[in-house]
Each structure stands twice: as C-alpha cells, then as structure tokens.
Image (cartoon, rainbow, N blue to C red; front, top):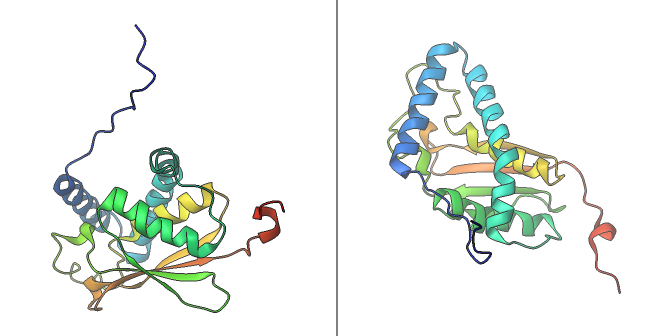
Length: 181
C-alpha cells in the first residue's frame, strides 16, 4: 500500500521541558566526568556540531527558504526561522563590523537555561549552552560557510543578555551567487 503523494511526513515534537531537563542532566554529568570547564565546553561544542550537520537537512526541507545572497540574509534566517522553529524564540541580530561578516544573536530568553539559576560552584568558565554554538557552526559548514561561533555574553555569568557571536571566516564570492543579467 503506498502513501498518498500529497501527505507530508509527520514530525514528532519532544516536550520542551523534557528536552531542557535532559540537557541539564547531560551538562551536569559532563561536569562530573571532566575536571576542566574547557573540556566540557569543547565536548558540548563537538556534540552540537554533530547535531548541526544533521539538523540542517531537516531545516532546509521544512523551512523552504531560498538561496541567501549575503551574510546578513543568512543571519536573519538563522534568527527568525531556525531559532523560532527549533527553540521557539527569535533573537535580535546586530552587525558588529563594517565588512558585514561579524554578527551577534542576542537572546532575551534562552530556553536551555529555563531551570538553571546559576552555574555550578567552581565552574565560572563553563559555557552552559555551548551546544548552540556547535549546532550553528555545524549547520553553516554543511552549506559551505566556515564560521567561528562563540558566546560573547551569558546571563548565567551575570551579563544582562545572552549573546552569541558569529564571524564568517571566508569572504563570499558575490559574483558566483549573482543572477545573470
């Protein structure tokens, strides 16, 4: 029996609270397994990278976004579509330099820290949500965009907002992406 062609596949959503609590348990276990915050941060980034390389296919299939022609378009898609689709939030975007290859995503609310009041004692350099940086970096790499993604500010460290910095490492060849005249 074949499936009707007009039906879209169903996507099952995980309960947000379950995901956030599971992520918290994962970070807590990593803190027990690794003495240094840098090792935990690196592991979270590596996990996120693996997720991002796979998540980009789902994102492109479900979002139906077209080709982007500038870094600012890419960042807007990440903020307005991807974050909304997967985390239910829309961060604000700022451009940090005149060459328009450095951007910040400012999260007023970070769902991954919903049940976290502060970092564990003695873990001041822990980037609790470093998984997000890895996800963004992995997804961008899968669409052939090398980027450096880091946390610039973190509410868990006493900052007023959570800010993720994204720096595109290669200058896009604009001629390659221009439409024919």
